[in-house]
Structure formats: C-alpha cells, structure tokens
Length: 564
Image 1: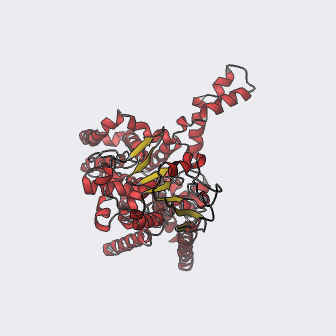
Image 2: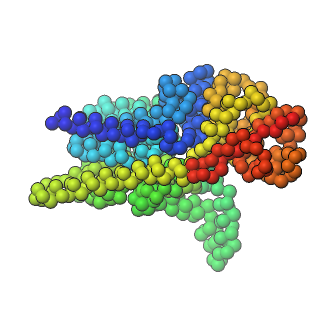
Image 3: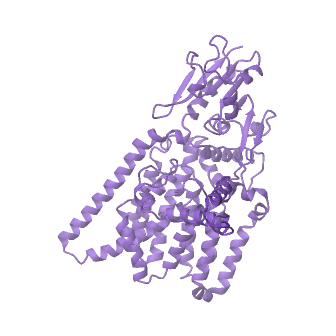
C-alpha cells in the first residue's frame, strides 16, 4: 500500500514539474523587468560578490528603488551558474521550488487531516492550479515565500506530536520574511494568531515555544537595520492606499458636496473612514466568486485573463470542505482559517490591481487543502452508493478535471502569449540581440524608456560585465519620489518619456514630420547614432534597420540610425 501512495505522489510531482517546465523559456512570452533585475543581480553577485549598486552581499537589493528582499535573488544564483544569464537560467529556479511546494503539500495535507488521500489530492490540486502554475513559471518572489510558508506550517503542525519541530519550523517561517513583502506581514501575524488560538495546548510545551519565538526573532536580526532606515517604507509607498495622491482631493471634494452640516461631514469624510472603506473593499474582493472561479485577477502579468484562480469544479468540494471543518470540529480549523483570513491583509492596504493574485498566492494552498478535505468527505458518501453510480460519478469527475485543465492550458499557451505579450515587455530581447551584434558600428545608442527599464534589459541580454557596470564612469542615475532610473551607462543613453514628448529627431532630407530627439542629435555632432524607439517616433520614409512586433502583430520597436 505504501508504494502505491508514494508512487502516486511521484507521478503528481512529475506532472507538476512538467506543467511548470514545458516551454518555460517561451511562455510567458518574455522576461519581465523584475525577472531581468533578479537575474542580473544574481549574476552580479555570482561574478563579483556585489549587486548592481556595488554593494557586497546585501540584505536588501535597491534595484529600481523598491528594495527587493534577498532570498529570490540568492536562490537564482545556481540557475544562472548552470544555465547562464538567460530565460532558463532565471526561470528554472521557480520551476524547481514550485514543484517542491507541491511535494510539501502532500505532507502538510496528511499532517493536518491524518489522511494520505487528502495529502495526495491537495498536492494534485496545487500541481494543476492555474494560480500556482502561472506564478511558478516566472521568477516571482511570492511563489518562493509560499514554499517557506507551507513548509513552516507543516513543521509547526508536526510539533504538536513532536515538540522539537516547533523550533525547526521557525527556519522556513523566517525565510519567508526574507522573501516577499506580503510574508513580512503575514508570517508574524500568523504565528501570533496561532500561538494565541492554541495557547492551552502549547502551554504544555512552554519552554520549547519560548525557545521557538526567540529563535524566530534571532533569525530576523539582519532586518533590524532595515527597519530603522528609509528603505523600510520604499516599496510600501509605491503601492499603499494611504499614499494615494488623490486621496485628500477626494476627501475634500466629498466634504464640499456633502449635505451634512459641519462638523458631521468631517466625521463622515476623513482619512480614517476612507482608508477603512478601501481596505474593507479590497479585502472582501478576494473572496468574490469572480476572483476565485470565473475571472481571476485583473493584473495581466499575474494571471491568464478570463480564468478563475481556482477551477470551477473545485467549488462544491471547497464548500463541503469548509462546512466539514466546523461539522467535524476539526482540530486545525482555527489554524487554517487564520491562514486564509490573514493572507489578504497585506494586499488590502495597497491600491493597484485589486484583487491581486501575486500578493495573495500564500492563500492558494489553503483552498487546495480544504477542497481536498471536501473531496474526502464526498468520497465517503459515494462509497455508500451502488458500484454503477460510483463509477459514473468518478468518470464524470475525471472528465471534468481533464477538460478544465485542457481549457486552461489552451488559453495559457495559445491565447495568452499573443494577447498580452506587451504586458511582459516583449521585444527587448530581440532589440538587444541586434544591439549586441552592431553596437561597435556606432558612437552612441539611444533607447526609448517608453516601456520601462530598458537599461536592465540591455544589461541582462548583453550579459554585460557587472564589474564594468559597477565602476562605469559614464553611469548616471537619477531618483524620483518612487523610482530609480538610469539615464546612461557606457555608450547607451535612455531617453525619458518627457524628452520624447518635448523634442524631435531631425532628419534634414525628410523635413520635420514625425521627428524626435533633436537635442540628443545636437549634443552629439558628427557621431553615428543608433535609435531604438516605437514606430511612430520616426518618419515613415526613414529605413528601419529592424522592426519588432508584439505577438499580436502591433509594433513594439523600430531601430533606425543617424549618420554624421
């Protein structure tokens, strides 16, 4: 019997790996700006022991100014070492730890419900999950944080039988905090809630629990300098609803339009009431049927559009599982619901692309576990029916699952890349490949910043020497209130969107029509320049050295040259 269970688990893990690895260098259709940043900083650490900012083995990577947490970057080093600075080198890491999460789900499901069938079902559901597959085929920090959370909860649950596991569980819990910003909030809250809810049982292991808490705090000591620096709030300011510049304007507008007498309008329309309203609205949106079963998250990079985060066939099992947790007074129901309810708190204080699949991936395993428990309950009911009905029901379920997975994969591989390649910054690789072959023919290369962060794509796809970049005397960066932008390095100049709106590139033989970048040409008399921009940036009559289209056929980049 044991070999059947582990044989089935082996097949689930192989399937999960295949679903994450197949065409991983092609789908998603290109590396996005976070992936190239993670990959290049991993490459920089590998080659020089320093990040792009010339900092030795940092705890936080400044990157674009959002201060990335370190674990995803350091975890990417082996992939870059073995496969190079390319798509596979960056994406093999999430494929491996995404598959590992599926494996750990089996052990967690078995520990929580005392059933190997629940463990296998939960692992299978996570293995085929649109939510999890999508975010473990590209390099997203949240998917690595999810592995550490699942591993930590499994070891914590094991601690109720063998107290030594309480201390061991603090290691993956602490690692999750070093991985993703949502986990920095979720993990401490989850531990506090769990310690409170199970305080009577944990008092039996008082000494071990205290040691576990101390161990967790010691593991987090490297974060202390960060907590007292300006870096702490850098990422939060980019996304927080409290830093929405329109918030005060809306409050004042509503006060002015209010028919309530003073001071009542101030009691109704103020920061506390508005932030509370948006927090509640954001929080509850993650429980909507649209998000879970039909539409998914609106952010096009984080989810296949028109597909739920969960399969629709899971809905009855999920409902039955939720009811059964209370009906059977399951001993870990409080732990499970703490997991669910706390997972959506970090994202609810943000204001972009709500509901959000990436920042709430930590919640995805909960749904698979409870759905698996619901399946176990249903299976017990089915066993009471006749053989013919049992076979019919199971056959219908298998066909439904297979059809659902096929529909999702068809969308993912056929529709999604063509429709949303622009959202993945498609075209940079093709353009930089051309630059790499011809850059020695030019004095300066001017690159549009219209699509965001061209310097990092240039560094990545040129495999640019990190030591050379770190010490480049021509490197010029400038910081805005929310971001860091590179103006130039080496022979590259990255034209801002403002410059593109204000100035025009002048071609004497073609007149002023459709022209751009005048100031850049005037500042470089007698130089041979290569320009990378959008098709509309240049006169139609000007010969294109290369045109790159998005996968839907729309123009992404044109490359032209200006001779002295």
